[in-house]
Image 1 (cartoon, chains in turn green, cyan):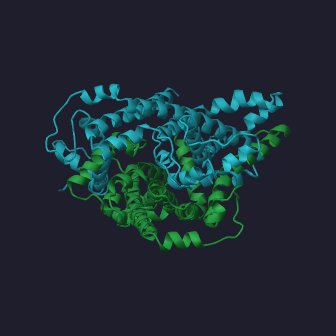
Image 2 (cartoon, helix red, strand yellow):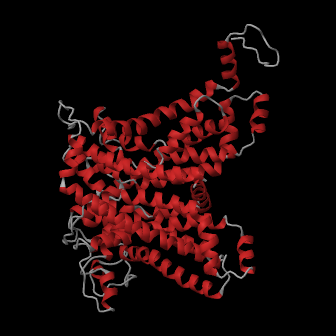
Image 3 (tube, one colour):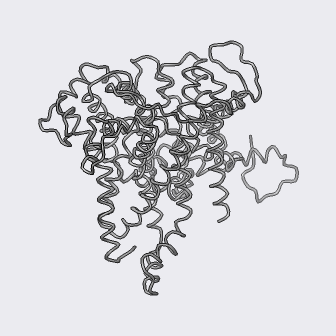
Length: 274
Length: 312
């Protein structure tokens, strides 16, 4: 875009500084997770552990209910991802390929609520769950995460580019609409669906507000909730908490590393929406 | 149901119902209902109804364990004007959001533009900037809580080289807002670099080359070509980032709480107040009124965005 020498030099300098800013705290937490208690409290602080130890991981995985939190979070995230993939692809398919009364209006309403954060409407959601005596259950934790507005929008964009002739040809061969959805649409939109899945999984994994509100006993904690409560409530060693933070970040990094292309494509769509 | 398929053959007395049925069959309305119906029902149940119900609740003295929940009209809203905790929360949230949005977006925009002149290294940098974005808010705050620690934290160690005395970052009502801004910039900047990158890549290279041939320098190209073309994306990012920042809660929850025996300043924010009123004191009607404030704020931003785009 700009070929001038001084622009390129500034670019390198600025990007390296910003990269240090984003990466160093991350290296810091990984380093800390492998430090001994003495080294964590040492002054001056060290970035990387002098004598790496697995003590902190052993502590948080062995002597706290943290493994249970990880299992809970896994379960919730997988269930939520599955639900969102189904609802997004189905709704996206219908909005992309069928004409029905009020289609535009319904789609607009869905889009309009996309950016309204759950914090703004969680009170009635909580009352609803309370009234059916489902507080502190997995169902309650998964329930608000079964649809994703962005997923519907995104899948519609992906499916709209599948040629109509293909669907017509299948219909002439006697295929029903469900068969078309299962065999043609899902197959041809699988890359987009992966992106939606990644967003759904990380959204569920990182969810904090709703578990905080709906969970009341320790056995239903998610990793995020457990981490926040440990950090807040007890006078604890920082080492195990750092190990817990690393455990909670790593799945996100793995998913991101594996599916980077899909994710970037998804973000590009968000940007192009503008 | 023997509805005629062909429209070319006009039938004088075909009923309107039959016609409608035929049209529905052609449009496969049965499938649409079966496929979309459940999704829309779910959507109504977990989005539309709670949003509407929030507004309704805000006019009632709703308490979850009480049987009587009398209608109180605007009383909850009037109390918003008296509640000093709410005023603090609103002021802190606004100050924090303004600082965080401006800092995040300026850095992101500058970095995204600069990345375009080192295109080969751009994907690597974008990846490094993106690590905090995939880090959830809670571990992100846990990381920074320790970085800010007054006695053991590396930030005070770093600043000691410049002769700055140890600062209690999370103890001071002003410093804690700055600390929160830094965490948010750290967490969000990578996302907006990628978004701006999408917008910048869409600008045709020929336009910039033509400008260079006409003797424009980098600064002129930036101000007269790049930024004007980026305007819709900038508006979108301002709205998105403001909504994210206005909802700040998890980092406040982690950073303001005491741990390692070190107390912290109890910074109030809007969502924190909603949480406290709704789920600690169970004054759900009043929490509803605060939710409506949040709702109105988000909606007005979206309306601004919508109107701005419609003009184009």
